[in-house]
Amino acid sequence: MTTIAPAPAPKASLVEPGGIEPIPLAHRHGSPWQLLSTWSAPNLEFATIFVGFIAVAYFGLSPWQAVAALLLGNFLGGLSQGYLSTWGPREGLAQMLMGRTAFGFWGNLIPAALNTAMAGLGWFAVNSISGAFALATLTGIPVWIALLIVVVVEVGVAFVGHDIVQLFERYAAFVLAAIFLVAGFFILSQANFGAPATGNGTIGDGSTGLGGFGGFMLAAGAAFGYTAGWNPYASDYTRYMAPTTSKTKIFLAAGLGNFLSTSFLMIVGAASATIMHVGLAETASPTDTFTNGMPDWIAGLTLLAIAVGAVSANALNIYSGAMSFLTLGIKIPFRLRRAIVALGFGVLGTIIALIALPDAGVTYEGFLLIIAYWIAPWLGVVLTDRYLRRGTAIADLVVNETTKYKNWAGPAAFVAATALSIFLFSNQVFYSGVLVKVAPEIGDLTAPVGFVLAALLYFVFFQIAKPVLGAKLP
Image 1 (tube, rainbow, N blue to C red):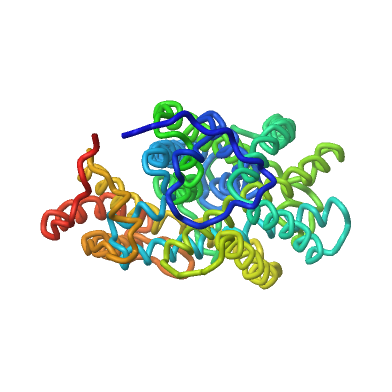
Image 2 (tube, helix red, strand yellow; image 1 turned 90 degrees about the vertical axis):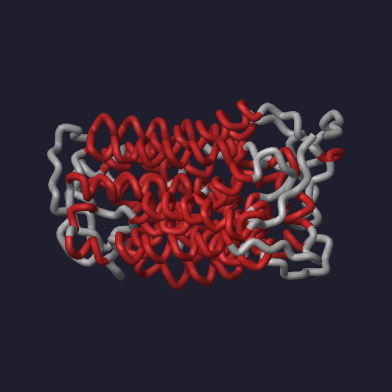
């Protein structure tokens, strides 16, 4: 492969043109270590804390059991994040676009549409709500006005594009880390880590929580779903790097940035669940619940960090949501088509957030727990596909939309594995799997079963389908 020296980075103030086209070698720039902040800053927000909180308060685990479950889920999610991030520099392609080798052009519409909905709309609404609650409490303005302020900043960063997103995350990471370290250590100093497992936390419908193995699997699954929720974005933020960039450095920077930030705040969230706040109104928002009892100056800084953290997370959600939308193959004949799509997601996401505001707690919980249901089987398919295509180029297969590359093995394995794993093992308010009804103590095994089943099915289907492979790499 012919390589050239990385070009100087373009000015961050310029609006990034184009859409999902491969990044030319002349435009490659960036250091792998910038991924530490890219994947730390968006996790330094309230949604991360809430995952740890529900591990104790809802799933009935002791604080130490919760820590073990959260670390397991985050480790697996960080591992896949680091590996997927190494894919970007070789062809300069976005993550969901590369999925066309495993799913084919038409089959890839399934995961691309799911990621579009989850990233550009779902996560956008969830994070915007927490940021709005925090800003409203901090300033005293109405929540809906706070929401609009948060959204304008989020969309503005994502609209400009890749370089301003990376720049924002870099500086936000330092500010957010400093504030959350102070708030986190205050919570940890007040927490009761000797509290026993309750085994009777409510899951959302008032039913009895599991504790033990079942609660452990629910907490690990929620943590994995949150951390691995960034996986479909991974190469979006490495595709501008030169092909010669060290894969080891990319893997470590992206993986550790994701793992360390999620683990710290989830542990803080688990610790916060052991602290009783006397006199707190039942109608208090989740962010008020978290900051209640803190000294005023720490509470104020924490609320500010929650609002900034929402912007950090959603800058990536909107940007990558727009990339996934363009992967659907929808033609937008404008030079700034990516930026236009990002703006559209901001409008739609704001409407969803406004609708969800009155019942934010339940919305939060339900959304956080189902991410892994589709991420795990998607990972099983794309990782197996990458293994089977080792040593071959993929750019010509996925970029050429005229030929519309075909591979039915991916969508068949994905749909079958997702449907069967949910049918058997889902443990949610709206649906309990067949085996969960018989043995509720197993918790929720949907994600691990979906991953393994999808990988095995794809391996078999690939041998039958015999999809076209790319040319051998030099």
